Image (cartoon, rainbow, N blue to C red; front, side):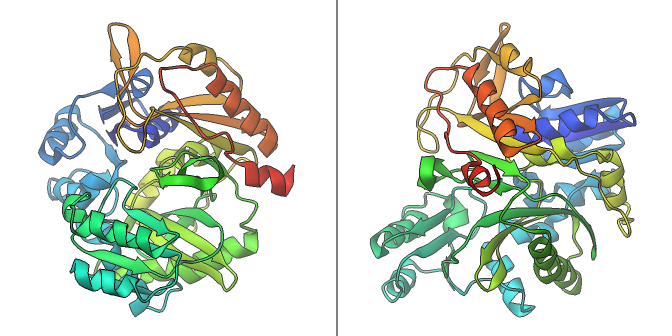
Length: 425
């Protein structure tokens, strides 16, 4: 098969890396890709939101299956456009992608179908949102309705912080159209876990869970980012709790989408809080997580192509993926200033040394090649994944890889998977 991966981040590198290992795959294309993806795929400089350009590429190259990484092209209707041309593509259509592209839609769906989640209120006017905030006791959660690259959520420790978040979204337009409406939510107490599943209609094949680290600084301090690292599996999520989350949140959400005339096909990603009252849905993503994919796919023993095809063909019933018992830890190396203002174009050194380490995989999140050099090209630059038979071994390998890589201003959290170590090692 010839497979096209859409996107240019660490998640797409992990997808291309895993697909290139399949005996069923002849070649992998990726658009627009990055310097790391170029090591395992043929790259084409077509933006991930250029739906017409990507469809033309898939037709011209005789692509057998397209796999969409990021959320923006899904929300823009890339799946609808490809299907209209008879092109096979993995991912939800525009209507189903509303689970991620509109937090208002997702929360209202959960409420309508009595799926466990926190209380919430929706506002389209800043003064009414601010008046509501004045009635609440912190912490207070403020979310932009639309897509904001993982940065549209504020967990405010004070009313003043919540008010500032409302103004940033609704008055200052920090998130553009995505912040025109806001959801103000009940703060849910407990660890957050990422539960992903291949989903086709009401059938699903769960993946192993992961736990992300959203805050930019050690100790979960500082602003939220797109993710500074993660690990899999998750000690806080027992098999019984995972089954409960799947049966009370993920499966009912798929049934709800079908009932709404928006049947879901692709990866359903549930951000789930393990509260004292049981698992509750925090949010949904309509694609593979980033950086969760960088710890989940290295543990996959089943051919990824088989799972993608079973999903697209609606034949997931009875499918079970096989997973390695190994632990996986991913540490994100970011540019100075991320998630706020940062510079790019810094040369990266030591990549080959890190990649030569046993059980270490360096996934490129935002890099570009120029004149034989590899340069930074974004905020989250690299995801260094370590594998091992214990969390400590996996974590040590990831940080050993990080220690061999350098670029000006590079920073990372030093406490990735610390909770897993405390619970297990």
